[in-house]
Length: 239
Image 1 (cartoon, rainbow, N blue to C red):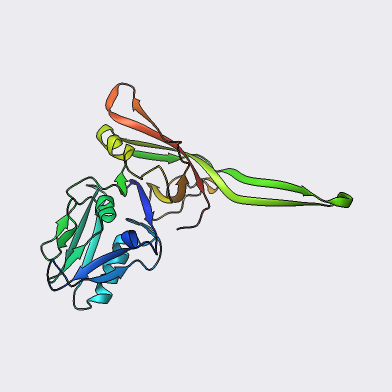
Image 2: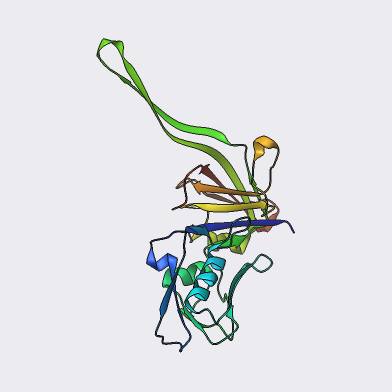
C-alpha cells in the first residue's frame, strides 16, 4: 500500500505530550501514568510510533489488559481500545493531536477520533527534493597569522511539496503539521528509508520545517485540492 503521510514527533520529558493517564477502576480514576520511553513519531512506520509505545506502556502498568492504540492510513483517524475494563485520560494537547473532543475514553467500548487529528495527516501526494548541504562556517584569525575554522549545523535542506484535499489544508493551516518541530514524512513506502542519492525517492524522511516557509496554493482547475510547499532541514536529533 502506497502511503503519503506527515506526522509530528512527540517528545519525552514534556508531561502534557509524553504522558497519558490510565485506570482500570473508572472514568474518574485513580489514574496511573504511562510515559513514552523515547521521542517518537505519532503513527510510525519503519520505526515504532508513539501510539504503539503508549499502548505498551499502559500494558506495563496493567499487565492483565491488552491495549491497542492505532492510526488508520485509510481514514486518517486514531482508534483507542483495550480487551478489558480500562479508561484513558488525555491532556488537552494530546486530544488535539489525536483528534478527540473529549479527554477521557472508555477503552473497552473503544474510541475513534471524532475530529481531524492535528498531529498526523493522510496526504494525496508527497515529494522531497534532492538534499542540499546546509551548514554554517566561521573563520577566526589570531596573532601571528594563525586561524581556526568552526563548522556548525551540519544539516541537509529539502524542498517539500504535499498535495492535500482543500478542506484538509484549512486544518493544516491552523495546526503544528508542516510548520515547526521534528516531523516524519512518509513518501510512499513506510518500510523504506528515503535516500535520493541512492535512487530511493520514497520511504520515510525525518525533517524539521523551516519556520515561516509554508505556502498553500490551490491547484489550478481543481478547487478541491491544494499544494503545500515548504522548506525543511534533515539531520536534527529527535526532541
